[in-house]
Image (tube, rainbow, N blue to C red):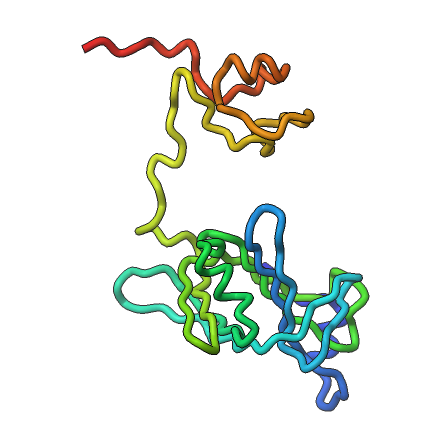
Length: 199
């Protein structure tokens, strides 16, 4: 079971304190970009990482009687149009969203936070706000099967942890001959031994 650190537990049990409880968010946009925001009126440095101030409202978890998985929403200020630009490019869907509950007296160590790891399953926007719906995978959107098996085509994303290619090439046509030429044939994600189907 997830528990608060000893510092946060002691702080939570105080009858009076000058510290502030705050939210921080890590929003994965793509494989190379993560947005770091906090709902405080100033930037917050936690564990050496700067979280920029941003208008955010965290809504409580909700569940209906229709068999939907529990979900919750966060509404984020969009007056600078940064968030809606990512939304229009389709960057948020299926990406990780990590919410952190922090205390202003304990911002130096990673242990002093409460992490909530979720995925962005839906998003919408208006002129002022972007609203992200967070939860587990939306089963209505899951591709089944998630992987297809091909004789002459690699199913791995180029240079990801399954591809493992770390050379200087910047692209791949996903053919075995190319993978072999890169010296990465052992990690080829296709199945050249599959028989052809004759009808």
